[in-house]
Structure formats: structure tokens, C-alpha cells
Image 1 (tube, rainbow, N blue to C red):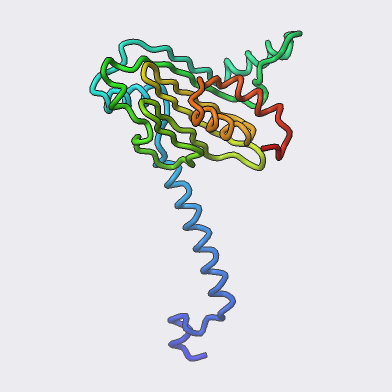
Image 2 (cartoon, rainbow, N blue to C red; image 1 turned 90 degrees about the vertical axis):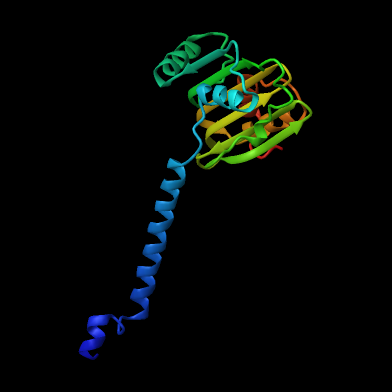
Length: 203
């Protein structure tokens, strides 16, 4: 090999170049994944209130908001385990948020959650029918579970928001999507329980 080739790397074996290129591709893919995660749309009761205000021009006059974090969820799981009745599908849950807002007067026709800017989430379904709109989104998770799920359902009078995090069955987002498409009221815990009881692979 000539001295000039050694300095410039033109004489580098093809196999080594291929390994370097693969390593660079893996690094860039990981960097892009972290960047996308950091830029993902943040969902919370406050974010939904802000979106209602942005689209209708008026803030909701009242609200019901509930957030249960990891500590409170651990206590709830312990109480459910001791209960002889059971029935609460809390095993895979680490955290959940629920909120209900009244649609501001005259805002139903302008409110359309399918127009909400969303990044970094995988849409399961988006629905717009008349004065009703909503979506089901997911992200993360492994194997047969989903790590993070958001559902929003808006009607002519109320907006429902729910977010579940933990190890959720894959059947849950599909079940909630069907509920939205059929125009039925959303019941998160009931849908979660039905999804957990459904045999794997059953449609």
C-alpha cells in the first residue's frame, strides 16, 4: 500500500468500511428515535383544555379531571388484590388520566379533534362524524402489549379524554377505535377489562 493510501484511507478493506457504515446507520437510527420521542405531542388534561379553547375560542366552563400516578396506582392494586370481589383491571396499569369537559356554547360545530396537530404517535383510528370527532393513539410497548395509549372523544355536549400507561393488551386500542367509530360512550376500565379477557389472536 502506498503511503498516500494509508493517509487517506483509500486502501481500507471493503469489509471494514461496511462495518463502519452499518454502525453509523444504527447510531443515526437511534438518534432519530430519541429526537422523535422528544418532539412527540404531549397529552394531558391541560393540553386537551387548550385545544378546546384554541378551536372554539372559549375555555370550558367546568371540568372533571383525575390523574392517578404510580404511587396511588400501587395502593389501588394492593386494595384490589385484597378485595374478594375484584373486577378492576389494574394489573398492567402504571398510571392513568381521565378528564371530561363541556363543549363551550356554540363550539360544537367548530370542534374537530382530527385537526389537532399530532407528532410522535401512531394513530389507530381518527373519526369525524357530524359534530362528533376523536382519535385513538398509541406508542411504545413490546410484544403483545402497548406502553402508552390516548383516546379523545368529542360530542356535541362533552369531550372525553383518557390516557393509560403501563403494559396494556394490544386488543385495547382496537376495541376503543371500534367504540369511537360506532359512536358509543367511552368507558376505559370496561374496555380494558374486556381486552384483557379476550384470548390472544381473537379479532
